[in-house]
Length: 425
Ligand code: ZN
Image (tube, rainbow, N blue to C red; front, side, top):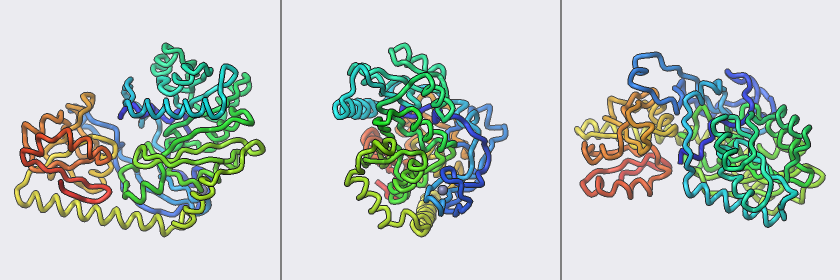
């Protein structure tokens, strides 16, 4: 799945440090929702030599804007530190490629796109999505800040601007006559520090009749599933439709359609068109906005309840592993992911409890987890060392991993699945 992660948001960097106002509306009415303390960067795996050195940590505090209801973290870590060690994985998962192919096929048909149209993708990576437009005879333009990845895209025929996306670069492209029928941005917005610049950029590049097609994890699904481990420094914002609608309207864009997707633990896909040309919002938009009012998208209580559930989960899981340790059981962990890093560091579960970590990624094996310094082994270590329990940190792939580990489980090994509800299988 790692191939689905862009090397950066693709958006122009802004000042790092702690924000004093909302990332979307600028209000200083930011209400603390959940503090995960000072944590190391969730993807900053360490080499053995680095274990002895200092490990920088940054505050990880989630707040709710009482003015526009955007949920966000307060710290902006400099991009060169966040993405300094990014490793490019060329193969997107089959699931991600099919997902891209399907939406492209649909938009080409629905909007009658052809040789005179233009499809743009922000953070276009190696052209994994735009390639399907090319096959349909629709011209494309990718915007991708990572030079090595932009080159891979160019080699497969995907015209790519090697740049950050924001108000400035969009204005420059618009000045060159670039106007898009569709702008894609998948899992970009959550990473963006200069939200207003990026949305202004969408507007500048869209034809009056053009539309965005933007996907991002849905804050409601994060909260319902107690998925607090999706909070880490790369993820600056956690959107509801209401919060995004307010942001877009400030930049003359109207969200006229929305779809819920199961991908990435629950996501939204929104279509927005410049005001004036935008169609009447669909029933889906009206229904979801009304549903959000129903569960309290604009009220702090909804988000404060989340913090309470995370606390309960912390108590349940830490007492379970402490009891197992007390009974002399051995415990390993599965999944050296950013999610896992947030969970272990916030719950304070480390080497005193866990013997080692396993992960299928050969790039991660032999390295150590941030903060907790667990050595990462290949999954085969579960069969060889036979821990009594395995804490499953990549619980979002539970079915797949439990199946892969059938042999370990037949031998009596058990998995602890922490989220959305603690269970032992
Ligand atoms: Zn706000």
